[in-house]
Amino acid sequence: MNAFIQTQALKKTYQLGDQRVEALRGIELTIAQSDFVVFMGHSGSGKTTLISTIGGLTRPTEGSVSIEGTDIWRLNDRELSAFRNRKIGFMFQSFSLLPSLNVLQNVVMPVIFRKNGKREKTDAIRERALSLLAGLEMKKKIDAHPSELSGGEQRRVAIARALINEPDIILADEPTGELDIRTEREVIEIFRAINSQYRKTIIVVSHSLSWLESAKTVIIMKDGLMHLDVPDPVEALMGRACRP
Ligand SMILES: Nc1ncnc2c1ncn2[C@@H]1O[C@H](COP(=O)(O)OP(=O)(O)OP(=O)(O)O)[C@@H](O)[C@H]1O
Ligand SMILES: [Mg+2]
Image 1: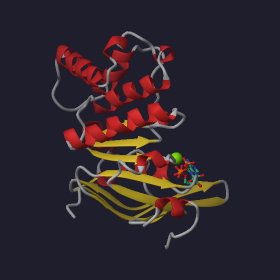
Image 2: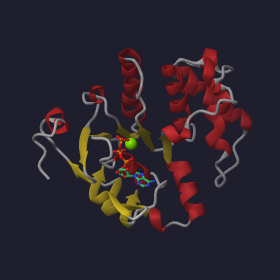
Image 3: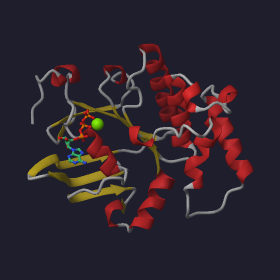
Image 4: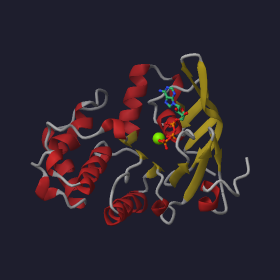
C-alpha cells in the first residue's frame, strides 16, 4: 500500500498523579492517500489520542508519525504548526466555532492563523469561503452567529472551516455526535463527497454505526491497540470477535 500516513511503534502514556495511563500501546498504522478511515471503539480506548497524535496536536511518548515522508514529531514547533495548518483540516470538539464571529468569519479563521506561505488576497479567501459555504448549502446564513444555527448547520460551518486551507487530510473527532439521524446522514454524505470528489484523505472517530457503510477502512481501537480488518465491527464493539 502506498503509505501516505504511517505510524511506527506509536505510544502515548499519560501520568495522572501517581497513575500511568497507557493511552496508545504501540500503534503500527498505514493509511493510503484518499482513504476514508473510521475509528471506532469503547470510550477511553485511545481514539482521540491517536488522531491528535497523527494531527500533530499531541506529542507521542515514543514512536513516529510520518505524513508524506515527513516525520512530523521531528519538526520544531514553528515548522509543525505550519505543516498542520497547510496539510490538515480539523474538526475537533476543542475547536468549536467562535460564538462572537459570524459564519463567514469562522470559516476564514484558519487562514488568519496561517503564518508561513504566500500572502493571499482577502477577496480570494472570501470567495473561497463563500464557494465552500454554497457547496454546503449555507450561503444564506453567512451573517448568522453559531447560536442562531441548528446543530447540523454548525457542523457544516465547521466542515467549511476545516477545508478553507485546502488540506489533503481531514481529521474529525465525533463530527456527528449529538445529531439526529437525518442530519447525521447529511454530514456523512458531505464527508463521502469530499472524499470521492476531491480525493481528500478522511479520518473520522465516531461511536455511530452510521459511518460503517461509507468508510473504506474501519479500525477498532481497544485498550490503546488497533484491530484492522475486523470481520464484523459490531460484534467486535460488543466485545466479541476481536483478536489482539
Ligand atoms: N490529557 C490527559 N491526561 C491524562 N489522561 C488522559 C488524557 N487524555 C486522555 N487520557 C486517558 O487516555 C485514555 C485514552 O483517552 P482518549 O481520549 O484517547 O479515548 P477515546 O477513545 O477518544 O474515548 P472517547 O470515546 O470517550 O472519546 C483514557 O484512559 C483517558 O482517560
Ligand atoms: Mg475521544
